[in-house]
Length: 448
Image (cartoon, rainbow, N blue to C red):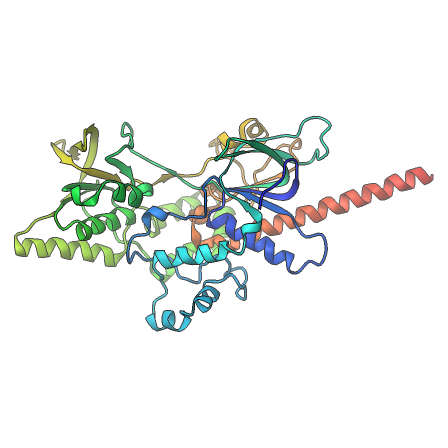
C-alpha cells in the first residue's frame, strides 16, 4: 500500500510495531461491522519490513507473558487474529496445548506477529520515516487535520498526508551509559544478533555483558553456550540477579483494570505501584534463567574449568575501543578497579521511554504539561492540547507517568489499542454530527 500525496485519513499511525499493528487490527474489525463509510487509516514504518526485537530472538528464549496476551484476545476473544487462530492456521494447536505451557518461545511469537501483519499490508507503508507533523497551512482543504511529512528512506522523496488523528508508536530508544559509544565491538542488546554474526563468532575469545535484567541474563547464557572456547564476563551493580515476581497477585499490576487504579489514583497510590511492583518487569530475571546460570557457575567450580565470571557490585567506568578489542575499566562499589580486554561487550542497559517532543516539533507548544514537565494525557491515551489544535494525538508508549507500568508493554496491548480505536471512532462520529448540524442550520438560514 502506498499512501498518496495529500490524502486525508481518519487515523495515521507513526510506527508499525506490535502496538500499532494491534490498533490496525482493531480498526479492521470495526470495518467488518460497518457497511458504509468505514474509518480510514494509514501507517508509516521506517524499517523495510515488519520486525519486533529481531536481535533478541535467541534460541529457546521464551516470552514473559501468556500467549493469551496477544494482539487481540483481551479485547475480542473471538478475533481471527488471535494467537490460537495462528496456531490453528499453522497446524500446531494440538502440539502447543500438549506442551502445557502458557509461554511460547520468542521466535514463535514473532512468527505470530508476522502472520497477523501479513493480513494488514494494505494499510502500512515501509521504508517511510515521518519527519514532521504540522498544522495545515492557511486555506487548507482540511483545516481540522494535521499535515504529516513522510520521507521515503530508499530514494529520499517526500510526500504529505493529512490526518484527523495521529497515533505515535515509535518504540523505545536504546540507552547506553554516559560516555560509552556503540561501535564495532561495543553493542547494545537491541542490535545483539546482527552484531554477533557480523563479528565472526569463532574469533570471539572473551566477551562481556553489562546489566542485571532479563536480556543480560539471556545474552550471558547464549554466549556461554554458543562460544565454548570463550571467557564470558557478566557485569552488574547488584550482588546477584533478582528474580522477577510473576506470582498471581503481583501479575494483577498488568491487568487492564490496574490502569484505571493508576490513572485515577493519587500520588501516594502511584508511588506505591512503582515501589512495590517494579520487580515484575524492571531489572529482574526469570527464575529458570537465574538457576541455569548458577548451575553453570557451580559445575565449572566442580570441574575446575572456569569460563563464566560474575563481576557483581561492579559498574563500567569506561570503554576504549582498541582495534578489534575493547578495553573495559570496571569499578566495584568499594572503589577497587580492574581492566578487562574483550573482543565484544554488550550493554543490556535498557531503553529510554518514548518521548514525542522532537517529532511533534512546533505542535508541542499546543500540548499541555503537568507540574513535573510531562505531557498531560487523557485516559484514552490522547495528549491534552489547547483549543487551537482540534485533531487527536495519541501515544502508544511514553505514558508511564499517567498510565503506569503497562504503558508500552505487550501485556495490555489489545485493550490499549481498542481504547484508542474507540476514541477515534467516537471523535469522528461527533465531528460528523456537528458538521450535519451546521449544515442544517446553514440551510435554515438560507430559507429564512
